[in-house]
Structure formats: structure tokens, C-alpha cells
Image 1: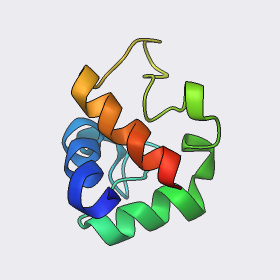
Image 2 (image 1 turned 120 degrees about the vertical axis):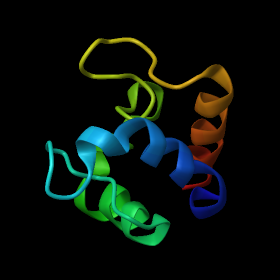
Image 3 (image 1 turned 30 degrees about the horizontal axis):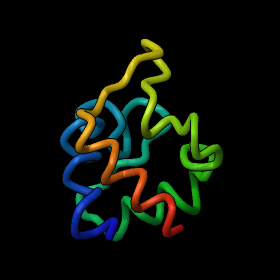
Image 4 (image 1 turned 90 degrees about the horizontal axis):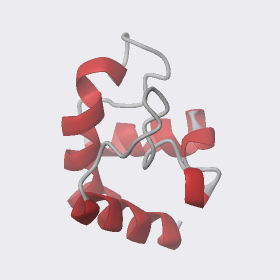
Length: 81
């Protein structure tokens, strides 16, 4: 589900700042498999707390950065993890 549905959302929303070699945490790679690895293995704190995950809440502003539909997709993926 991450590869097919979540990656494009995360890469599109977060990639301009959080790609490898840029702002830490650098959890967005050029492909879905590497991004999944970064999020789940190198930055597990991003998904550690399901209700307050940094992937859902923007830690910079304390507000949602994804649309409701995008949040639903990310939350569905997280429930599968």
C-alpha cells in the first residue's frame, strides 16, 4: 500500500524539503522502496505514535499538511504496519 498509494503523497508534500541530503529528517528518496525503508527503519519515530504521527501532523506548524483523503490513505497504511 505504501508503494502504490502513500509514496506519491509523501514525496509530493514532503520531498521538496525532506529528500535525502536536505533538511533532517531526510525521509524522502527518489523511489518508493527506499522512502519506505527510510521511514520505517531509519526514522521510525515518524510513524511511532499513530494518532500524532509526524507524517499526519506538520511538526512545523502543528496543523495538517495533507488533505483529509490523503490523511485517510496514510492512516490506512499505518494500520497495516
